Image (cartoon, rainbow, N blue to C red; front, side, top):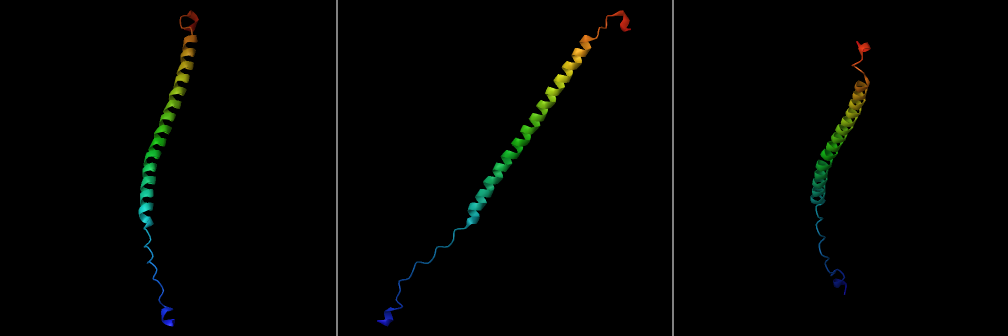
Amino acid sequence: PSSQAFDLPLAHPPRPPTSPTTKRGSESISAGIVVAIVVPTVIIFLVLFAIAIYVCRRRKSDRAFSRQVSSIDITATNAL
């Protein structure tokens, strides 16, 4: 009877761990792609926004200047 004490059923060998580098590698690739898309998009948006602000301010100053010029009466004889 004691000879059967060590006849234990063998457990299946443990599975080798799956390499997380593949998963992390693919995640870093997708994160890199997202960064490569988002960063230029944000930069382009900011540049366009800055151009729009510049154009709006330029138009306002041009309108103010044209109002000043139109209010000056250059036909009066006292202007010379």
